[in-house]
Image (cartoon, rainbow, N blue to C red):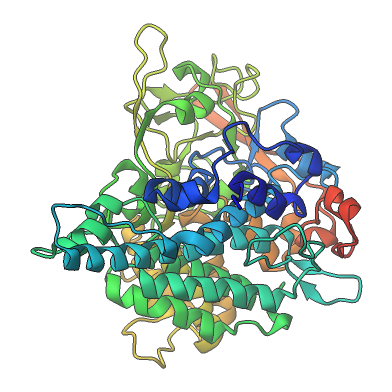
Length: 568
């Protein structure tokens, strides 16, 4: 009896998605399982569907819902979320439905992939085809488990929280195809069970996949199945970065009572790979400007586009200026000597607030008077780019520079696109994951595993690369884990800004106070050659204490009696 694969997949996601979206399988969803198993291309296509759903563009949605930015997009759902509308019925970007859909494809793939022969080249000997078939299946197994872990991670990050009885819960774990006769009204697993499930998938991926995809001289079997041609797919190092991300979340204050992962265990996930990869690359601050930067651990395919610039260039450059960095973030950048701007030894000049600052400030943020393709003026009354001058002008006095390619031209008379890639994993995050966990476990200078580096030394390396010269007296002055914790959190904010970490970092730190801080901007006025700087609140934040954790979507609670997070 033939099995319609579209119908099987439909049933597998039905219990975890809004039913009305899936009442009828797509018209092309009519291949039978026999057809799939007869074609390695069709079988692998099931897995590739999960790749197609990975994020591939920077929209900075959760950045503008954090204290790092606001948006000038009127009625932006993420602004509405941050200013009081977040609820179980209104959750912009909720990945519940999409993640379970992709997990269902991956589960189906894992249930059939071993029955397919992938290496069938008649030019090869039977032995070569057998060897390559085994290697091909090994890689596909690793990719599938790694991708399933990715989508589980999204569910963990967005929906973990405390039930009414105080138990830390995760999401319903689904690791098999659900048939019509199966029980699909699954309860939420505990947070610890979900962490263990993700870690199990990632361990399979790490064991099966090469650290990165590169050819080996003279090894035709390996090169044809795990070589350079498979760049942009999940690799072993990317799985390790994701594992360190999950471990860091589990060890953090908002989730630590689950006892799923200790700080030491989180540091021990990241430490060996950092030792293997070596020092941070020199161009890591602007990794997005080069697809060959060794900073990058996992990139998606290169595309020639200009949409990021269309959304975020200042209006004088024909952009929509959508993402407006905050004064809160600008103030977090230290002086070039490494001292915070409010430190007595910093040398900060309020009359020249952008002078002698950490070079990352001018790499990531366009401020008044900065040269980016031309001089950008954001002072009050400046043509086009002045604060609140147009609907496409900045609301904070700042424009986004990070990820913006100066080679793009948006002038309608000469439009120019350029190569862009979306980065899913990179070295700097791995180093920051390690530094945070190692400091909490062993203090600023502990190295019980003999990695050859410590939390302090990795933060020193990160700051030296940024342009803060040695000996970095401010870093050297830090003596306690508490002081180092504050510096690591700030360095994480700066190094990973606009990569959608900040919104979630604040929550895993259980930092309600920061979560509720208003977003600030600067109004700059001219009087002759003198500029005056007035700092104002631009947008209030209306996050309740329960919003450390996100809600289970309301529609899912209508489908069956799934436990909602407390306060929602």
